[in-house]
Image (cartoon, rainbow, N blue to C red):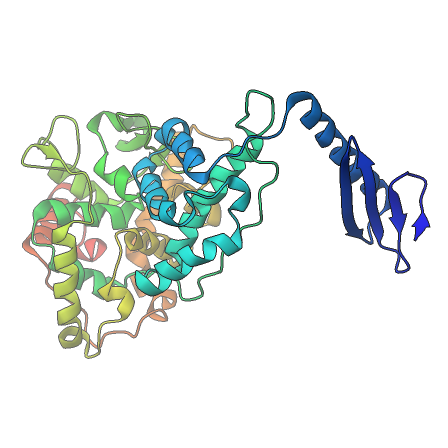
Length: 413
């Protein structure tokens, strides 16, 4: 062993630095590997300070993961819209790690939970990783925010909790125009068809559609039209809002405008309602039944079995469809970012009439994009155009044609 300039730090024959020092009756021993002398000195200084604080203030009290999780549910989770989901994850984790101290929670002790969820419950890696994200968040709060009365953090350091990538994760499934006509034709209730049609033509998220209010509609006199401005926080409890945390501008193409006009006067506050009540979700029994019926008819309509993505189409895939059509129509990237409600690095939250006009021009392009080669490469083309659809969709087309005097092709579903 070779000594260095600092007492307690030596190097071995391979040049690796070793800390071995007794401080206040406690032995510090660490093999550091080939690190610079300065790093070794910093590590030794931290260890000495930790021992000194333990002597002056006492030791770090032991806390179980269950105690930390309860504090998280009481003080942190209520601030989030997903508080119920967080509580569900914690309930699943508790039998496996609830009794463990915070220092005992790491990859190895989480392995039984992972194996049980994958093999016994049959969930995906993505679902398991979401539970691990909750564990990470709680442990980070224990190490960086929560303190004992003696000043010690609840946890000294957060362990690395690795999350295995789910290579079989479900990918987005943007609809072709023909698939959209088939699916929407099976939406037998007017309000379901209206919401789906509006979502696929605006790219709004599900709760943005469900919470859309008439008092968010704003006139744009220079363009002789109206737009909607969704506030960053829009739920009554203050926990739900636009995902990027900013007010969201929503411009309407002719199809979306026809939906809005068809909904006027049905509810004093909310755009989408049923029997006088606001609709709180889109992924309901009617959507799932329509999806199942459409998948059954897929073979008859297109001469091939329905793809798995179509059989399991999610509400959020309507947003992916909107985004893909904007791209196919060669709408500029920055414009697409605004239309999709993504953060784009711009500090602009107010738009001029000219800028709104540019956005409207962008959403109007998605009707013309139906014939672009980009879309036809995503799906095998149908031999003949699909016609028909539900009475609701036909009624919406009729309303649009009468009020806006548009050709039928521009309202194609």
